[in-house]
Image (cartoon, rainbow, N blue to C red; front, side, top):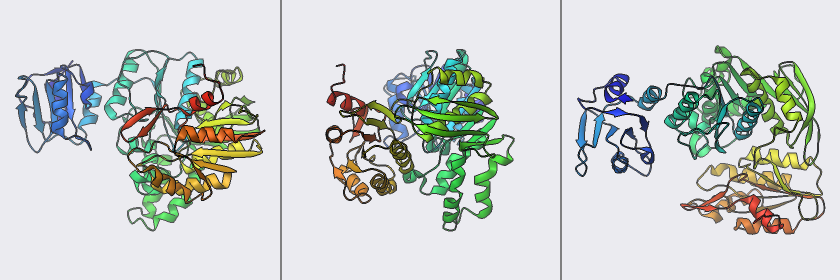
Length: 512
């Protein structure tokens, strides 16, 4: 239990002569309770006063809130429940997160990148599993692990600071030695990742996304690159990331805050830290510490050669897509750097124990007349291009794509994705993909600027059925944007929906 006096000492502020003892801390009212210290942090929807009363309804006795000076007031409806205002430090959440959750698993890996985070974490988790290591992972696929551990989960790929700290702490307390998680640009920019929670960091890719939040590619780069400062042992970076130097240099002149010196620091600062930067990627380059060479792709598998720190393996992986092979190399590198045996890892791949995550260039069916129907999470211009490129390499007679773009997200990528679809597919159907509160027709209008001849079918299930009904021998269809997701956001409604289920039901493959 942590006392209010210990909290006061940690923060370096006077919280008054009030008694309090806490088993936990939270900034989410639904996770508050009698023995939980609650931090009243306002949001877009709720004020500090709103969340204070919400926490009190859950039985919380003590609430901390930011103010100009010390004062407190008591809940008039429930004596004994108080809210303390004080000029708290800006990093209060971080200070108290460390106070309440000091423990960490011994091996920790954080993965950032525009695309590839989920697959890399998934591969690394499987490598730990086959090596009989205790592990936990957190990210887009939720919280998974070799042991059942009771801690709060998150519905975003990088949890808030307290939730992530709690997960690390409780995992360590229950004997988990390995922890992998996704570190999004939002999460890094908002300092959600604890400074002592990254032994090996991985940067999988960099291309346009989230400019509704970061505004410029330079700011987006800075957010991604900041993970390197947190790495203790190694910083694994995909060689393709460095190809974006020209893009950033082109934009530097229009950004007064990004001087040449600052730009070089952003790009190369990790080389100057105590943590070594190791490049990985495709091809046989002497500059690559980890590399993968693609020999031949089939509908279900790919023949490859992989080299990690001089160790070479030739074999077959049960998926297609060069980008997915890059993600495997990254996970193998992290596994090795964190003490894993590459002999064990490659034996696990050879024996079929390593698979791609659900909804990542996943072959759902052969289709009604051969060929294949694939689903993928691709929701960025580069992500869509890479997946279509991988499917085109299978030499289908026709390649079609069904996709949309999320509402209230980066609008600048919509036309670009439309053009990528037009240039790399034989036909395109535009459909809804989590429109949220934005006008779905406007979203499709934006996309269609890049593919004027695309067909529009707003209803996603109808779009999928229409695409499949048009298939002929050796045709391939890509259903992009949602991947593993089992819902559709329309307004504030979270409606059950899964691309895979629509395909299976239409083809009569559903078990229901």
